[in-house]
Length: 252
Ligand code: URA
Image (cartoon, rainbow, N blue to C red; front, side, top):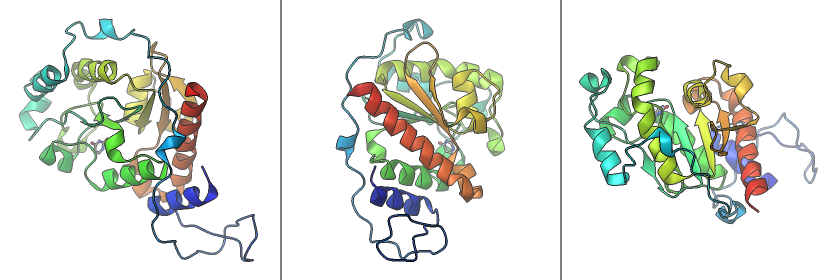
């Protein structure tokens, strides 16, 4: 990732960019905002290596049904396993490239997602898109899903029984996609995927493994949190760099 790309990323995320006072200085310092450059193409996707080894097939037992994509999508759309089906407008199955290297997993649909049936379409989604773009990824290149397929009323935290009911759907999606990396955005996603109560601040910044699959999992802050706490955006940027590095080291 070049310095120019980093600046684009920070700008896209709304991180204020500061540069050296003296033109030509290599060492950018914090202190003076710069006029943003006109938008340019995102970092080359070619930076992300092509998949090499297939992911071990250890998720099979997690979903004995072995549904294919259309059957899985239909099953989710009709799901009444937990109480959330009573209040949802639409299920939010997930969207994107079904052969993606990157699987982004959030918490649960919010109001906009419940209305539109697509994850991360609200303000947090715009920021997620900007984060992905800066990492060289178009939204369409990755697959985006949530821990829950239905919106919890008033955006409350998912209940354990809701997570348990929904988990086989997500596991089957992971099995079908066979991503090379999982990016867990937010505390709820990270803690549920890693089966831990450890705070997100401690989970981020390192490479975990998704259960016994061998798929690297990197946790980062939820974009909705970043909208409220913009100073934390730099840490998310570090997490994305870690993800890119992990893929590079893993695959080439
Ligand atoms: N927040 C999430 O975690 N997921 C969405 O789909 C939207 C907002």
